[in-house]
Length: 69
Length: 507
Image (cartoon, rainbow over all chains, first blue to last red):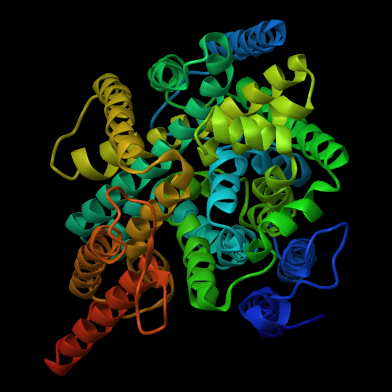
């Protein structure tokens, strides 16, 4: 069982990861590799939406596990 | 020609059903200003999955259907900032909204104005925040009207062939339908229309994305050949890109309608979980944004857009849909996009009316009886919608995303009062008010300077401004100035050895 403080730290890290990913613009401002004619710049950022949802969902789960309604 | 009649008939039939259902539903439960306007239906009674599903449809407004594809078409990759914006907005919401929900539950807040009044013990500051919320919603409502107008223009133009006449009639019809809908559907969206609206919108999003991508899967390659600069982000836009997505994300949950929606959740936990999964809907937004590129690879649709609609970017999505789907489905999809503007516009003006009655009129010392309050709320909604109409004329349809961003510049100035107010223990109301004033004045100044002096436009097109970092979002600069002023005034208060007011014990 994680302590409440540790929960917040882990959830905080999970929430910050997409900020880091999206702020690192030079890392994804590329044309190749492409998927179905779509350049890397577009599909990479779209993929990160799905990753964000997983990260945020995990953060919500960690925070609320064992918390009373 | 025949197809156009089928299209319009399908549109009208579903629209009539939509309105009738709403009208009947109204009689089941009476609206009451003291109850939260429900952004999605009955958040208090439904499970996480259904809430998530229904709230998701609320993300598909004219911003997604019309404004983002339009600016992608006209300006290019920089407007893909809407994708990181969607992700980060929900991270910020997860940090702030459960906290606001818990405070609201404890202290009985319904609006951000209620919170500010209690937190800073100042009705005047609450009134400033409420009025800022009301004004910030105006351009956002205007954007929804632009979306409704685009759809009606797409249906009316083939009838007479005169696009100017069609788009003027479309604007009049759009505003009349909006006023009529708001007036008859009462003070809050009723649950049955919410379900129906969401089903229509989801069908539209899924079918449109699938059919367009199947029909034109090779179009992207052509598009990047025609517009090579759209393939990635020009380096000079880096700072514009992150300031746009960061500030849009920070702004979303300061909007009165978004706060109302969050507060209508059943519990802080359910709110957190359903918010966490919302970025998935951004994937639909990303695909719709790409329509602005795809159209460069679809000669037939691009021809219609250029010749018939004089390159009006707002017509990108309607044109692509009409060129790829059968008439009956075009009619259905058009209805989806139409109510995707109509319902959010109604909800936004409801949020405005709530602020007006709760945080402006009451604080002016006027206690109104419920019946009179309801009447004022109804009339004010129509008044606000007509005010919003003014914004339709100062920003061209192609650049309608600027409407949402102008709203962002304004609403961001409430960030210190609402978000910092929740987390920073020692925050002086004078500091927040001074920061707000500096932010609003500088935001308006930079927006006007940038458009009319720097870029020498004759109409408002952009929300970017020149700076030592290159082009950046005006809202970013204004918020930085706001925060600096807040810090300086706080410093002065400390220097004078006055004890800044501390949060009341039980907040």
